[in-house]
Image (cartoon, rainbow, N blue to C red; front, side, top):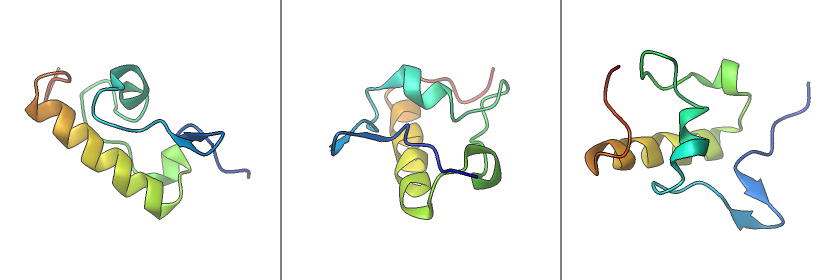
Length: 66
């Protein structure tokens, strides 16, 4: 299975706490962070996505639970 390239395009990082639309793809409908086996991201990018989701929650852009 080919890994997704949702987090990087043309050597530009797309994952940060401000990209709410992208971060919502990595959360379940209940607001939990999806595990790697569902996102098919490498460990490096899964950690960055997790950190960005946590930062976005602290700033109030993404709810903790739905």
